[in-house]
Length: 260
Image (cartoon, rainbow, N blue to C red; front, side):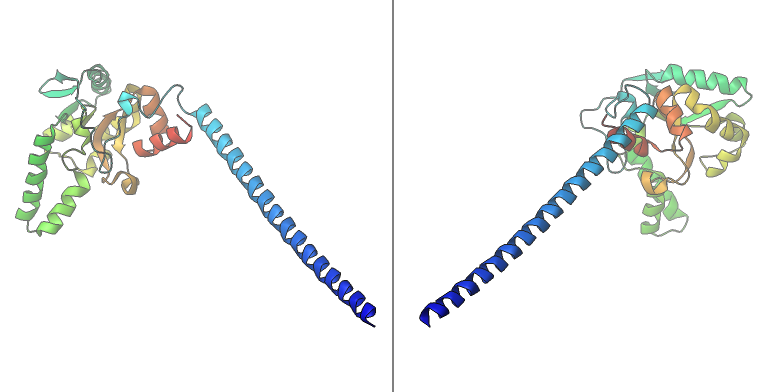
């Protein structure tokens, strides 16, 4: 009888052990399956990333890097580097980066030949001067009857705080059509609808410039549409940016995605 009970106990233990082993093997297989799935997913993501990187590198201008001097990004989240010093030259009463001047002169000459003479209304600004005109704009809005908070907000929509303005780089300038300017035209969106404004938008890239703050990109640039604000980035970069309807921030992101 005892021998029979021992046999039953042995069978029960073996059955239990076998069940545990079976459950363990099942769990192990499940973990291995999950691990294999995750590994395959990572491989797929890597493959997609590599394909995207390869495709971007085929489309983007060759040899261009985000660190190139003419692609310096300055905005509200990327202040001017503390050690930055603009290498300035003069053009009329204004200052620009020496390397940029001949390109703007070529642009201005072409515009004049096409019957759309241009006039510079602003170019390089020091951080101190930016502080002065920034505060002046706030004061002007307050004089118009706006609250201090409203004045600051509207100023920030079209101007950047000292240290975050592209005008500190010597690579940017504000231009208007000469006829439009002489008739009292100012830095307003309606300039885009003038003959000279349309010509500028269509041809600036041929000389290495972009409309730095394009329409419908305000959420990215944090600046309202400015059809008068030119930024030098080099011809190849400018043509790519304008052709693909990008802002500078998006272009630099593409370069980084391409592993540049």
